[in-house]
Length: 223
Image 1 (cartoon, helix red, strand yellow):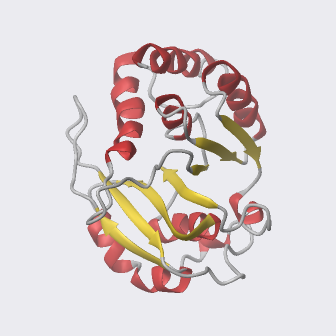
Image 2: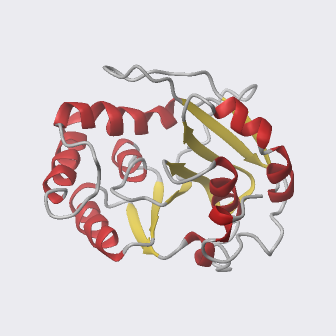
């Protein structure tokens, strides 16, 4: 698996010379910052259930996939998952399509904005897990992710050191969107001083049909 993940990271760094996929260019820093960080999602255990949100065969949506972190990484590490990479930028979609043909046949690319795709009846509330890493503010990513998740499913968000405060400030947004958030213990990455958190948001009720709002509004006017 490590060889497969290294091969994928090499692909990202090669493509990065042509267009900007990541600001991290050193292979070892990128391994820690992107690969190891992405893999943190697979460490989650559901409290009191002894299970993981990433059950075998789970449908997983990576919102704002970019260079494929964490979506492609999780698809490589867990070939049993059905991973959809949602990305709005065509050049990034082209890269992802080429990369998964080599490294992650259990993944597919959907080139669209989350604000639009979230109203597609074939996608809305059909995923077991939605992911977002380095996409936007906490309430913004909840608005973009939760409409895709079925009731009882989860959104997993990669956040920084202020995640507990973000949850506290977003209680109203979570209640509106039908989610209940739990911040997981802080973790660190090799050769990085910062602390990071994963936030697990359980979908507790149907998201009202007006969400997500039209393109740009969740960012400009967060709930």
